[in-house]
Amino acid sequence: MEKLKYALFTGCTAKQSTPEQMMSTMAVADKLGIELIELTEASCCGASHLQDYDDFLSLVLNARNIAYAEKHGLTMVTICNTCQLNTAMTKHRLDNNAELKEKVNEKLAEVGLEYKGTSAVTHFLYAIIDDFGLDKLKEMVVTPLSQFNIAPFYGCHNIRPSELQNETHKSKENPYNPTSLDDLIIACGGETVDYEQKNKCCGFHVELQAPHTAAVLTGNAIAGAMDGNADWMVTPCPLCHLKLDTQTAHASEAIGRDVELPVLHMQQMVGLALGCTPAELGLKHHLAKVDFV
Amino acid sequence: MSTEHKITTQKVNFKVFRFNADEDYLPYYENYDMEVTSEEVVLDILNRIKWDHDGSFSYRRSCRHGICGACAIKVNGRSTLACKESMNDMVELFGNELVIEPLSKKRVIKDMIIDKADFWEKHDAVTPYLVAEIDENPESENLVSPEDAEKLDEADLCIQCGACHYACPAVEINEDFFGPAAFAAAYRFSADVRDNSQSRLADVNEEKQGVWDCVKCFECAEACPKDINPIGKITKLHQMAFQEGIAKNNVAVRHAVGFKKSIMKNGVLDEGGLVLYSEGPAIVKHLPVAFKMFTKGKIVPPWGITKSDNLDEIQKLVKSSSTAKF
Image (cartoon, rainbow over all chains, first blue to last red; front, side, top):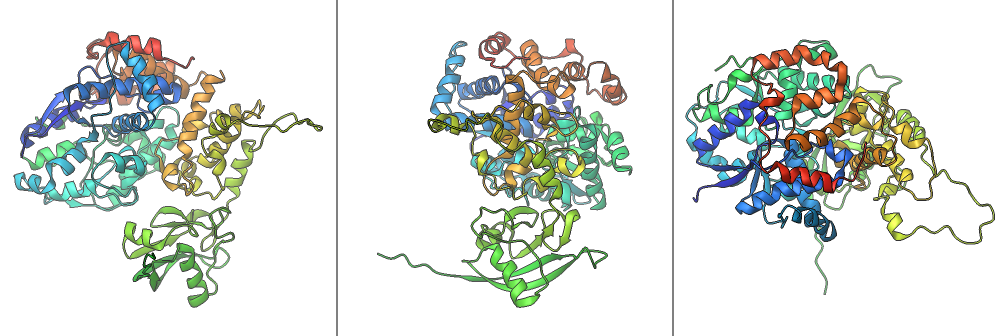
């Protein structure tokens, strides 16, 4: 098989509050022999909040990010569900509306760029599943995670709106019964935990404006995983990770029950199975202690 | 030339939610094994349960054409209009074991029938009608151009079935939150060129019940049987608040605006700076968690942020492409 190569859109979080996500992405890519060219020119995707304020500006900025992936002639790979949503949504709107695409390109021309629509945009989770292949991953596992019950937490923006997601990814995901992350857990040798909140919202996006709603959602998610006998949780989204890992005190208070579980990034889980060291995966950067390694 | 239309049958196990608020202490599930044909919709199954198995089974139905909104229920957690949803599609999506439940288990009166009072109260609260001076003796029709009609973005197709409202996690937690259906209705009338309401947009921007508490989960977009995309309307209401100059200087609004400021400065986000700008002095409540994060190497100070390469491009585009003001 030809070596897989992608343009990596890191998003902002991987460079600031979840450094372990950046470390584990690079470590896993290295183990799998996937080449990632980092788009250092990329801006923030707007995280769905800039979109509430200035829709056109968010389109221009996201189109610019994709244009850089196009310059490399590569598929863009994201490592954050919300980056994935905003980038794929931009691509969908521009590819289906010639007038809008022209307007955006008029702006991009001011800085010598053009959005063509030639690069696909996919999340690293789906790059591993759809392009690399779980069978091949299974063969490379050196430390099967067989003693662990692992609770998948999908994160909204990878599974909804399903129409957009299924147009974007080769894996067709049922948002009411998603399977990609479960399949990845199984490929790493782990046992998956089925629980009600696995495809629900973590509350991240309203943490500042609706803290009670946000905390209850976080609390319910962790409680659901705990009640399913999970040893730890795993997520493909750094924003879900931040919420589940750092906001346990508020979450416990909001739902009247002490909740806490180690939460791993999808890349960290794969890295453990592939024999990466805890240091390579940045496991010391978690608030909820990862004490099982 | 005729295409052969073949009707197939398959065995399906239905696990059906049962509860009578007048008699039962707890709800329970009744099992029904049935042969289902590829021609049937979910409502056919509800009818057969009532007509062939248990006459006391209760549910709402009326038009059978997907326009009255009475028969919305949940199948395997997915909101669905029973009269519109084909059994074939349900089996394809979830397999041969289907769980039939009401839209909201905590609001059940009997079986599939729920008390939708909260839905209607919230719908009423957004002035869901045109507010306009009516000329009692018009000399011509009040025409709306196709371009202006487009602005409604199909929000007028809502049938008030409640599917999105009872799929919304923010509604479940915050009883005051208006919810996606009410916001879609608010958008539908606010976007209408004939409307002159002075209060509707202000109402939906109120902090306790308003549009800024949407958690952005897209459950409503997924649930809507009419593909109205309620969260898209919520986004448009956010944008309207800025366009109409009624966006309040509060944490939610500053949070949206803060992204642009941060992008202008760094290309990427300054996470700490964004929280500071959004919260103002109230940032102190985040300090205990921020301190813990700092000890784990999760806080990058403003001077440590790696700015985007070619930042001048981003700054030029922010200046030339901005369409909103605050």
